[in-house]
Image 1 (cartoon, rainbow, N blue to C red):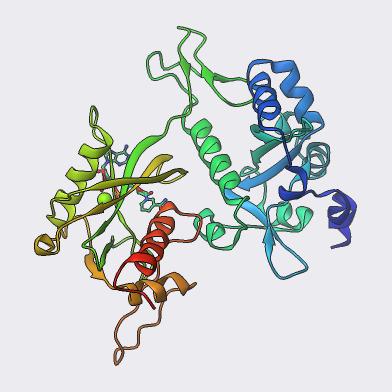
Image 2: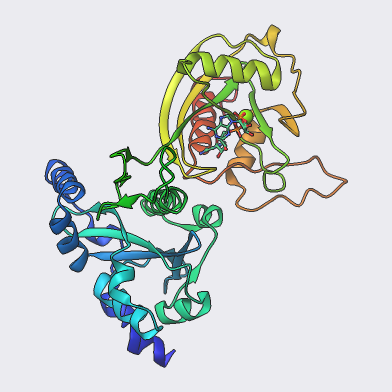
Length: 348
Ligand SMILES: NC(=O)C1=CN([C@@H]2O[C@H](COP(=O)(O)OP(=O)(O)OC[C@H]3O[C@@H](n4cnc5c(N)ncnc54)[C@H](O)[C@@H]3O)[C@@H](O)[C@H]2O)C=CC1
Ligand SMILES: [Mg+2]
């Protein structure tokens, strides 16, 4: 630990996102845009900015004295020093950082993957631990989860797009990391998201949740599916619900959207949909879903409270849990429960 303190006086210099982020929206967006277009300005912003770290796409998190977990934002100069001490060219490595966001005071925030270094050595130097991103979503505070999601998605995109798919030649990134260019043919590549529609279907009294075999034990979520080329949002929604559970939905209501870093960055569009109670018989496609079931408000209330996989002893009715609060699926399920409590038969 003595070595940690020498390398990085963390308690003194580490910022957290909430402390450095009060802002005028317009000034912030214009500054961000300048950093994407002006290489010199971006480099200067990096020199005076903060960086958060990943190791092979797992974000570095640090325990707080209050028993919580935070995303440590390390001054870029300190990261450079740590990397130098760990035997690397710190300056060159830090320049590989990708721009994430900035404050109204033009203080920029970047992220960097140090996967080529020994994980334990970086963890010791930075007084933190690299945590799988899905686990991080369960323990991070609200405003930090989208930062680590965006950072991982951008870093993954750079790692997978080093070559032009037309010429086979290497691509070069701009300083902000917002695009890559193939200099042999001038093609410009931008980070991509795949549109996904996620739908919470209700029959008025119950809502429909499903699980894939790859989900954590006991976890159920709303139905989701990738858009096919040329489809509208409503067409994808109706097709996915029909394919996966054999239902024809009626009314559809948009709820919200979110970037989701898995599997390769999805743009999630979240909707509520209804089916008539007389038309609620499920015909589940077990090639896609391990299970799909209707759940009552009481079961959903219990699921929203669960923070860990349920034990489900054989002599008791099985209980479930749902995706973490940050996931838009959680929002849909919570909205449905609140709606039932206000208007449905589930009034207390
Ligand atoms: N943020 C949230 O609350 C939630 C997010 N999700 C995300 O939604 C995504 C889609 O849900 P699924 O039910 O798996 O979709 P899905 O029902 O469309 O099935 C996935 C299959 O679609 C095919 N596919 C078509 N286009 C694809 C593309 N652009 N990328 C990858 N596969 C493509 C592949 O064969 C893949 O195996 C999941 O990967 C998951 O990351 C799912 C539930 C909750
Ligand atoms: Mg699906």
